[in-house]
Length: 161
Ligand SMILES: [Zn+2]
Image 1 (cartoon, helix red, strand yellow):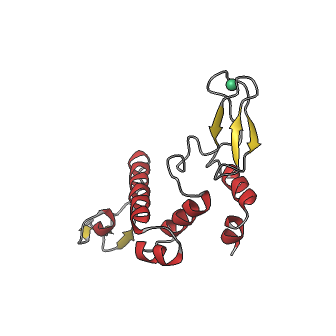
Image 2 (cartoon, rainbow, N blue to C red):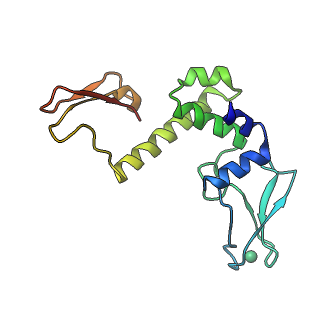
């Protein structure tokens, strides 16, 4: 699987994240505005950091990204994102990885919140001009039972966030 070949190669994973603009590919120093350089630092979990040659400021390569506040490796965080995006349940993520139950729960909650914010900012219309029936599984939002929003047509659309 291509995704796992990217995950298993740290340098390739960093490039992949930069190509997708998930982490910065170019960065200006917040202190002196000069262009920062990527430097190797094997003492860091990410093996790289941003350095400013002028004021000597050092920043994480995770700065301003979804990964910024986590102590997990980028590989582990990407695994969680992948499992979330492919609708894998929390207990299954725990089986496939060494990531704790609490951490997976926290990440899934955070990702659901991000999806919610994204949809609130940029809503997606479901159905067509004649209307439709939309089923929303509320369990995905932390409630137990599903809900049905009915429209004039007899179509049913399911979606999950
Ligand atoms: Zn600087």
